[in-house]
Image (tube, rainbow, N blue to C red; front, side, top):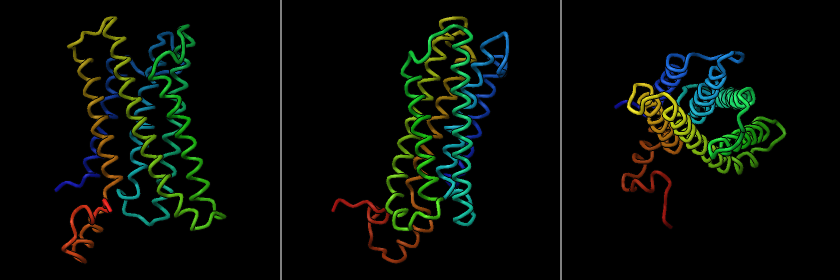
Length: 238
């Protein structure tokens, strides 16, 4: 059986390749300075998807997907999230720069509102995690109490980020189809399939994050074969 984390990695690579093919092959490339202002905008979907969605997702599951010590896993988790946040900020800046140079309005859509909210919440989550889990003065008790809400809030922000990306795909493709892109052309299909792969990647990230490691389940079954699946996975209606 192929591990879920392996499927997740492959989906992430697939989404990254697809968004690069879209923005480079179909949309003409990437540039911060260009007479063709669309090249500036292209930075936005590339960096936000690869950063916030893919690297951010890999950061979430890093505690389960890499076979290193707890300290090194924590460093990888923190670093990947930092890179994801930086990519997200630069990608958001590229969208504002594109609108400014095209004399287009900013923050006029639900996608843009949610995007700003995601970046803001992501930054808060990263700062909170760094202070609580990396600052030596914080006690082990506080860290233990802070972990469940940190995990839940992180998953909430991530799901919000995936939803924001999907709105972005829909918004951009709608604009393109209203101009010169055929609704059933290869570019339209590529954008839609990229969105589908993004959904699958996001779902696999959440499932990996909430699932106990296989070793934990095996130990639980060995210790008490009479336990139900619900009890093993820590869910009870009591």
